[in-house]
Image (tube, rainbow, N blue to C red; front, side, top):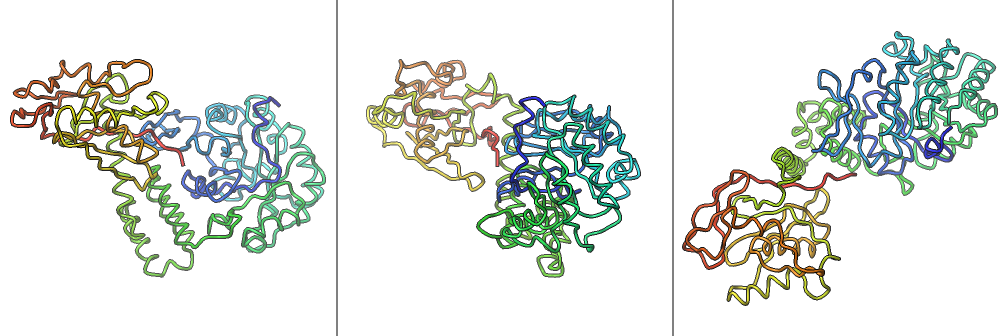
Amino acid sequence: MTQAAQRLCFHGKMALAPMVRVGTLPMRLLALDYGADIVYCEELIDIKMAQCQRVKNEVLDTVDFVAPDERVMFRTCQREKDFVVFQMGTADPERALAVARLVENDVAAIDVNMGCPKEYSTKGGMGAALLSDPDKIEAILSALVKGVSKPVTCKIRILPSLEETVQLVKRIEKTGVSAIAVHGRKKEERPQHPVHCDFIQAVVDAVSIPVLASGGSLDLVKSYGDIEAFRESTRASSVMLARAAMWNPSIFRPQGMLSLEEVMEAYIHHAVRYENHVSNTKYCLCQMLREKMESPLGKQLHAAQTTAEICEAFDMEDFYNETQAWMKARKEVLSSGLNGQDADFPVLDGDVITLPVKFIRREYRPQITPKVCLLEWSRRERLDQPVYDTTQRPLDRAFQSTVTVGGKKYRSTMWEKSKKFAEQAAAVVCLRVLGEPEGRSEGEAIAPGSKRKREVGLDHGDRDSDQITANGLCGVSDSGSQKRRPSKSQSDSPKEVRPGCTT
C-alpha cells in the first residue's frame, strides 16, 4: 500500500453508511457537521460513472461528475475531501478501476458494494450477488488496490454460515484492502430481523484489518451513547450507521441529539447551498419526518414541488432568496470575467461604484489605514466625513460595507470576515477610484482601478464630464454634483463575487 493510501484511518470511527438516495452531498456534510468521522456516498454504478466527465463547478465551488445527459451523478467539495468514501456498484475489475481512477483525487477512499440485496444492484451481478462469486471479488479488489493510491474497502453481508463468512473475509483481506464493513444480516434478511453480532465478532477475530460493524440501527443504536455500546458488543474497530443517521443525523453528536426541526433546517441549508435536486431533498426530509408526514408540515412538504416551496414550508424563504441572489451574482461575475484579468475595472452596481478588493492588514502601515487616509482626504476637500453602512450576510456571517463620500457610494464586491475589514475594503475602493494614496506599507503602488480612471472617464476633477465605463456600463453626466464626485448610473446589474465557501 502506498503512503497516500494510509491517510484515512478506520480505527475508532463513526461512519455514515452508504444509502441510495440518502448519501448525497447535503447529508454527508450534515453528518460531518454533527461529528461523523467518515461519510460514504450512495452506491453509484460503474457503467454510469465511467461515462462521466469531471467538471469543476466554479459557482458552487464543487467538483461534479457529469453524465452525457448533463445529470450530475456525483458531487463533492473540499469540506469532505479527506472524509468521503466513494462507493461503487460493480461486477467488472476493469470498469471498477477506470471509475476509481476517475474519482480518486477527489475522495478519501474507494469502496465496493458487496452487500446490497436489492434487485437493481444484484441483477447486474453487483452488490450481494458478488458474495457467491469470491473469485470475482478477489479480482475486483486486487485490481483496485494495485491501481489506485487511495485506500480500498468493501462492504459485505454475512453468508449463511459463520464458517463461510470467515472464509470469505480472510480471502478479502489477502487482496490488500484497508478495511471491511460487515452488515450483520444475511442476504435474504431485512431490517426487522435481528442483527447477528456473533458473526461480526467472528470476522473481527479472523482478520487483522479494521472492521466496521453495521446493521444496528433499529434495535441497538438509538442515541449517541448506543454507538459505542454497539461497537463493544461486536468488538469492531468502528461503527457504520444507516437508518439511525438517516432519521436524525445528529445521532453522531456527542452532546446529544438535536430536535428534528433544527436538523431538517440544517439539512436544507446544505441542500440549497449546493443546489441539490429537489426530489432528493424532498425524499431525505420525508425520511426524517417519518410518522409525522401527516402533520401540517408533513403535508406541506409532500405538496412541495420546488426547492423554494420546501423552504417556504420551513419558513426559510429569506435564506433561499439570499442564496439564489448570491449564486446569480457569482454566475454573472464568472461569466463577465471579473474574477480574472478584468477585475481592475470599476463597475457600477446601481448607484454604487464597486471593485473586487480584499483588505489584507499586513500590507498597510500600523497607524495609517485606508480609513484614515480617506478621512484625511475628505477633510482636505472640505467634505463631510465618510459614512460606512455595513451589512452581515446570514449565509456565512461575512461582512460587506458601503462608504459614502461626497454624495458618492463605494463598495468592495468581496465579503470580509469582520466589520472592520469590510469598512477598510470599502475605503480602499474609494481611494483607488479617486487615485489617492491608501497607506500601503511599502511604497504606494498605483491601483489598477485608479490607473484606468482616465481611460474610462473617471477623472473626478472634470466636473462637467464625470463618467464611468466598465464592461459596457456607462455613467451619465453629473455636472451638478460636488467636486471629485463620480457620476451616478442607471444601471442595476450587480457584478458581485465572493470566494466559494466550504461548509
